[in-house]
Amino acid sequence: MVHCYKMGGYNIVMDICSGAIHTVDDVTFDLIQQYEGNTREAVIDSVKKSYPTVDADEISEIYDEVTELKEAGRLFKEDTFEPMAGELKARTSGVVKALCLHIAHTCNLNCSYCFASQGKYNGDRAVMSFEVGKRALDFLIENSGSRHNLEVDFFGGEPLMNFDVVKQLVAYARSVEKEKNKNFRFTLTTNGVLVDDDVIDFANRECSNVVLSLDGRKEIHDRFRVDYAGNGSWEKIVPKFQKFVASRGGKNYYMRGTFTHANPDFLEDIKTMLDLGFTELSMEPVVCAEDDPSALTPEDIVLVKKQYEELAELMLERDREGRPFTFYHYMIDLEGGPCIYKRISGCGSGTEYMAVTPWGDLYPCHQFVGDDTFCLGNIWDGVKNTAIQDDFASCNVYAREECRDCWARLYCAGGCAANAYHATGSVRGVYKPGCELFKKRLECAIMVEISRKMQQ
Image (cartoon, rainbow, N blue to C red; front, side, top):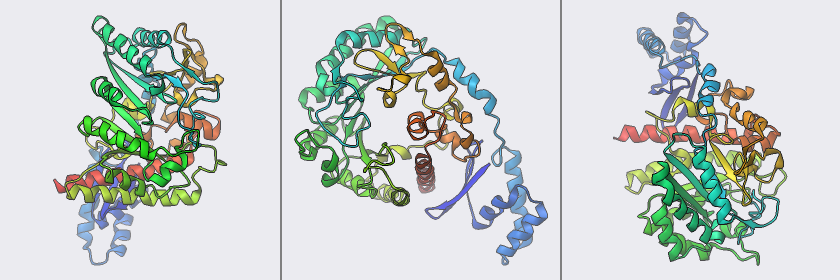
């Protein structure tokens, strides 16, 4: 299978199963799209009619070059990966490499679009004790097999509302690293309200990455990200974030925003963040019910796709000006990229990665917390709900019928199981708006990388 599209002045041909990316002229672009299922003579005659000024011998040579690429496995390569899907996932069965610690099921903001119901996850407000957190880290060590590098995200709610326990847990992890032959990498996600010098110094010393929540323009941010008195948080957090980012040398952080029906023109929010001095950016589409006022409409989706293209153009313009920035969804490696295991099996939620509630229950990821159906077990007894875990373990790209003929399948690995479940009632379903946006982002990301390589 190949996927052909035009963007940024390039004719781009993606060979899906080999991962090869080709930029070609107009004649070759059209010929490739007719190559499969037609005879040599029919293809050459058809292309000749479309390009009467091009010599037939030249078209014939192009046809032969395409045939050589096919024989070399760089065009129209067959998909041979399906038999490997279950086997590759089975190799890491029982090995956990990352935990999302819900250090606080409470928040000091009252964001109406919050998927976690203002940090409570449809339950009671709670904070994780040191004892529960310590046991969670021990659970991770005990179930990580021979893995050396382990990932721990401090999440909420707002994790800084339980900052003392965060510090205690990091100190405990560091105290056992050498003995257990492990290396902990910590991430902190925060809305910024409680950021101070102590938080900054600690994060710079202990956290390999920080995720800072900002929705861009003040009027957009303050529309949703308000405190319980209804006051916006933009003016309070932006100076703190600027100080935080500067103290990290402008690296190892992400500004993480959400766009909704209120701002499908999210590129304006990206520009605002750039004007504020932030260059490591992520803007995510809102996750909510279709009837929620924040939900993206079909008309919004059309605009968002256009915004992604304009974002790609802005990135290249800023490259030329010597002012580059990173957009999370456009980070793609055309030469190496993720291994075939990742391309087939996805994020590892419920198997390699789990979320831990303040009282120690295990869930496949943070987006399932609060739904008892998906409780896997707990950090003392381990995984007991093996049926749910098995469902996630078998949830690879080939488990979704809709994905089998999709050109993007080996890049998204079937997409987000949580989004699929909330949209269709099944972790093996497909969240169609998410698919549309992913494919547009992928096309833009590839175009950006092609353009950058052309400029080298």
